[in-house]
Length: 123
Image 1 (tube, helix red, strand yellow):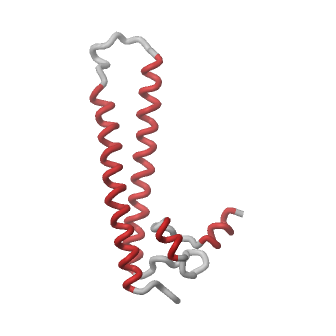
Image 2 (tube, helix red, strand yellow):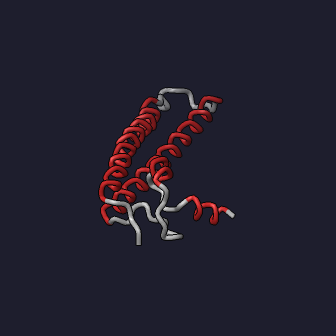
Image 3 (tube, rainbow, N blue to C red):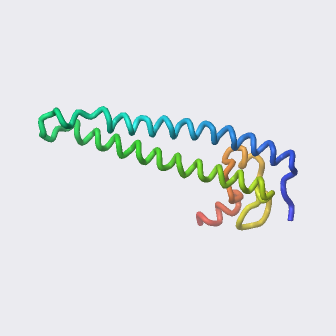
């Protein structure tokens, strides 16, 4: 079975580590926003009536939670890609067994499917 060379794997490791660092910072930022939203509320001192703002605050908190959840999932995918690099199985399509194109891996470093396999799955 063909695989990427150690030098190529190192290039991908660097790309993934950079994306991972950025993703972790974004997650921390989102979690900070969620925490501040929870702490900034003055629910104990306000009159207890429902306003339009209450609904929009809830919607915004839900959107932040969804974004944080997607970021956690992205981080997980990147960490698994690093494990595949360690196992020297990185860049091998899990459907076709062929090498995934470098351009695809540079754009989507956690990809486990080649474009060919992805298109077959979408049909």
